[in-house]
Amino acid sequence: MTVIDTNVYLSRWPFRRLEGDEPANLIAKLHKRNVVQAWAGSFDGLLHRDIAGVNIRLAEACRTHGQGMLIPFGSINPKLPDWQEDVRRCDEVHNMPGIRLHPNYHGYKIDDPAFAEVLKLATERKMIVQMALVMEDDRTQHPLMRVEPVDISPLADVVKNTPGLRLQILNGTSHTSREHVKAAFEAGNVYTEIAMVERVGGVGRFVHNFPPQRVLFGSYYPFFYFESALLKVQESGLDEAAQKALCEDNARKLLG
Amino acid sequence: MLNRRRFLKSVGAGAALAAAPAGAWDIRSEAGLGENMRIWDQHSHMGQVPGNTPEERMAFLVKCMDRDGVERLILSQGYSDDQHPNTPEQFRKENDRVMAAVKAFPDRAYGSVYLSPAQLDFSMHELNRCIRDGPMVMIGEIEADARCNVPDMDPIADWAAQNEVVIFQHEWLKTGGDEPNESSPFDVVELAKRHPKLQIVCAHTGGNWELGIRAIRAQKNVGCGIAGSDPTSGFVEMAVRELGAERVFYGSDVGGRSFASQIAKVEGANISDADKKLILGGNLRRLLTPVLKRKGYKI
Image 1 (cartoon, helix red, strand yellow):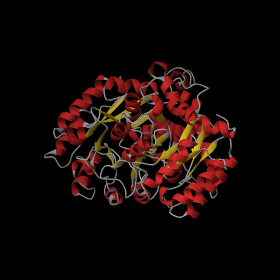
Image 2 (tube, chains in turn yellow, purple):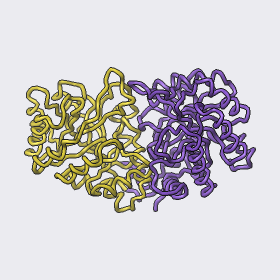
Image 3 (cartoon, rainbow over the protein chains, first blue to last red):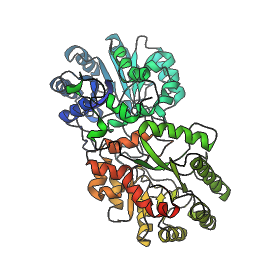
Image 4 (cartoon, one colour):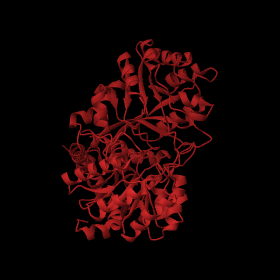
């Protein structure tokens, strides 16, 4: 079985060195676990304000390492001046298939008009939008850098108002409202992944609660040990076909 | 259904092996966690586990254990909705639930007694009922309406040290502050200093493990449990570096967590195979040996 990992990050987590934060180490781990493709954002996209520079480095790293395994998803911060140009460059200059958003690190709620505008622009360019809800358990964050999870209660309405949108939620947790996720799924082409899905047999229970074709493999490596997502699939009790859909087929269909 | 070894085999190749048939490579062998690896989970509950009875919930856990290759778990706290029971009746009910689950699967679980220093007289009675005269083998996870450094914890710790029974203590060091009366690793260290012959294991090592590991580092009779926090890279490597692998204990904190995410902290860690074996089960078996031998249980 091969794996498409839709949730990895390059560069440095601001508060700790990680075993896989050098591209060569990250690629070695992904190869070892039979990952054939990894959708990569950049930790730099959380706090850096030269987002264009972040995306140039991300694109370069993905070109240089992994022989095409890494697919870059550029960071967009719609609170920066002229952020629309960053979207254009992600698409036209770097040929990225999608962008990655971190609303809570960039200081906006998802009922902010700027969020709707990003989704609209990305959709017009036929780009996938990934949105991370959480980067770290708020009980373990650095005391000077406490960041609330993204509140997705308005998400279904925003999705409804953006026809053609393809949105993937990253790092949804056991605390993310199931009701709001369900509403978003029903409102349009919304997907998710399993990096922060917990509870015993949790991935199997999760897949049974949501449309299975909308659940993708995500490890959140290197912040998390890669093996966590992999072993959760095994613990899920899903049959081989369902595991294959989750680990590879669903992502392949979304990417098109 | 694939078991964990076969599953990891099937996804365990790499670029060089991508063309090789599934099963040509085995993560278990590479990690030194071969057929004889014995994973014992020191931290499990039946809360958030499907099922209407202790037996049904334990059956679900056993299914998941089989998928992950977990041989045995230490079960505690039952499955009350109330995270902090405060009447003897409630504690007794939860302990009875654990004993019922263990009785249904005696080869897969041992029980650990739930008690509280805030209910000292009852707790001393419950120690005798559940361990001295009953089937249980450990004390905790103690998660109660009193911190573990209170004087009323001393008779419990004395009993544990005299009977060579391990205490397993809930604690956290949350950014923004712990709950009222929630223990911290510092409280565990305080208790351990007063009882140098006691073996006590932190359930979460602070959750904020970079702090928790440092907090317990100098107190050698305090163990580092890795359960119940996100599988953040680096936890186990730092624990082994600062404490030595002999003081590090795998646990999951199921049902709120998965076995998988917590096993991954060890399997994914850049440490030696020998250290992984200690953490995933060897250390727990070493600490439990006196009580298991006394009871004639399997080690």
